[in-house]
Length: 339
Ligand SMILES: Nc1nc2c(ncn2[C@@H]2O[C@H](COP(=O)(O)OP(=O)(O)OP(=O)(O)O)[C@@H](O)[C@H]2O)c(=O)[nH]1
Ligand SMILES: [Mg+2]
Image (cartoon, rainbow, N blue to C red; front, side, top):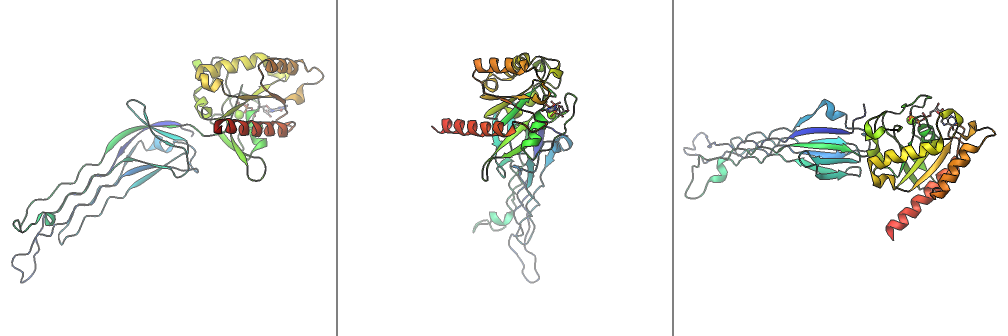
């Protein structure tokens, strides 16, 4: 189950109480105080883990507790501290306040951690209250409560390139042929129900990450189809590859398809809609002699200065030039940001 938004309550451990105790030994008439400190309560930390792909765990465990610290004991023994809890979350998880939605942490790198709820301190035992004038203290300190907080976790995948387009346009077919990702591919709409990430190797030491998301349709921003909520997973991309089915079998017009998808992107976020893009005119293997659909798409794109690559994701035709263009554009964008 792919879950990308969840509310979770964390209860850190209470500190153990300090202990009141006096030494009792044979032939020692008045032993001094020897009550130890309580142990600290356990804290709870979120840790980004590249092996975790969704927040589904928290659907099943919406309340997470860390252990309390144990009370102090006689003979100056401190209580055992409550063990800490480390909660693995996918890379790209944002941790937000449930009230205002302020971002408290953005765990964008593997192993990055955020201490979300601190355990309470253990209380002092009576031994620590002893002074030269106060030799038999009976005071001790109770353990402090641990922090208890509610958080809103939101996953926004981190990818360089986002694939957008209508259902059935061939997004999953494309990612499966340029990366090791193996999403479900089928000739019905909404095959992809959750985003997939694929790593595309370009040369020995270079690669980029592509996100394949569910298809969009007209009115997605009003909840049609699977809606536009998955677009959050391409919010952090640098570049969009917009796939358009140019075959006559789509039952739609490629130029109109472009317009519809752009409108949905705009409704989700003008920033995302304004992101640089490359058009992949897909399924050219089905075109036959009449290339007019591709020609019209090219004409529209050249007016808008958007590069177009004619491909057959299925037959793996034209994929290399497309991937090279994506890599080049990513380099240019990186240079611009650096400049
Ligand atoms: N002839 C031909 N068929 C293709 C091509 N690319 C994809 N297809 C077919 O189109 C259908 C849909 O492909 P998918 O890759 O599942 O499409 P998608 O865009 O991921 O679709 P959703 O996940 O439903 O949004 C499948 O039957 C593919 O085999 C192509 O270049 N040529
Ligand atoms: Mg798909």
